[in-house]
Length: 298
Image (tube, rainbow, N blue to C red; front, side, top):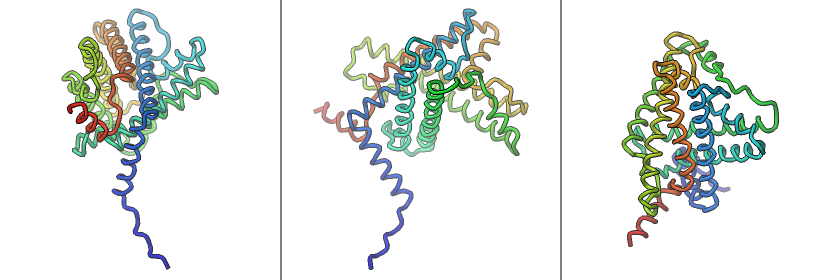
């Protein structure tokens, strides 16, 4: 009679998942697949930024959101082919976010800040999976509604303590976005880029696009968080939320067109930066990166 195997503990499961993720990300073909995800994300933000800039100069197309950008791409020649590529790219970026959450190739660590960032990566993976599903819906069926939806916020606000939950989420979202703005402007994102073999001109370009683009996107996300807090305070789910709501909020301010144009150009910069991250981003396990650094220093 065989002895009963001891139960597998949660830390053992976590370590096994981390080893699997590290082994996967070090495979060249998986690394190339993960780089493709940066291109898809960049294209979406590039289109959103262009839509915002067009609205600033008086041209209204579709909602200035990821859904709206997907709709614009689908209307182009060979739109379905492009959407298939975008859907695959979203799946790729979701996998990259999941790997960053589990294997921690960016050395976020186990501090409170590091854990929060890794939780954010995990949540981001679900977000990009959702975008992949929406993109597939554009391909195979009737096009989903692209305007801002208040349904989720309205549903949460209708529940006990719903306003408190929405307020906490909005405050946390805005706070994290402000921290990301500061870190981006100080250049913290550079540690995740492989710029050692790039020319000085390319390095300057990467730093400028990253600083402007990430700061702009974080500012837009901070406004989204503020609007969520406003929805909680006023128990009103119809406050504008999402990227398009944040951009419309800028447009309603004094000198709104100028602010919206600047935000649009900043999101275009982020889109270009993300596309170029397919070339610049350090993708690989922490161990393999340390080993390559040691090899290059010999």
